[in-house]
Image (cartoon, rainbow over all chains, first blue to last red; front, side, top):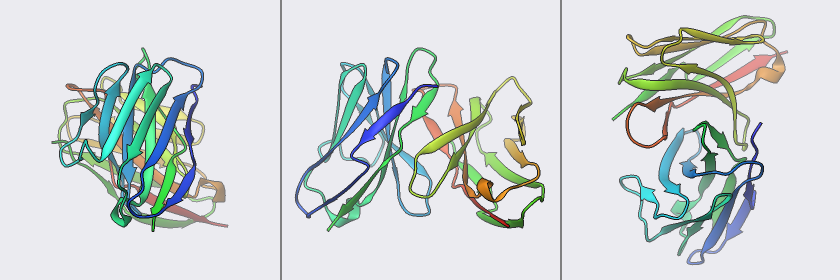
Length: 114
Length: 113
């Protein structure tokens, strides 16, 4: 099946710094990528949807200037958490879909902001 | 907006028992419904996908049913094993808009050896 990777798998950073998370589709072209956030013991909440070569569409309540999403190629999307704060600590999961529209999920990135 | 609820939130069963996990959704206008497994601190593994025109799907010891009109789906796990211990999430995809999924709150399953 299709494989999606995320890097890094976990990251610890100081408050005020920026963190970039990569999401890659390894064996297919992802026309659409999704970014989800999951707080402890809660379900996944969609943050934004990005199509290759165009601006991301953010869900209500998600600050686009804080969570910068770039989908520059058909195999790579990045999420940058700018000026991270402790409340941004969460599990970030991306998914990717191609022509068949089935979403394939990455293994997730755990972010801890001190 | 679509809301997805899963009951129970947590479940413990002895090994070998059959069990049922429940998922309900408020908007019956769905494209498909999917069940996922999530191990602690890990991503999602897709288990079963049911198209809106289907009533059920089976894979090994897993059987998922869909009653779109009542907004319900069940995941049946036969002869449970300790390796089945994980959080199970259901997610629905709507008919309109982007291909985004609405996730339930999950059921945390523990199978006791």
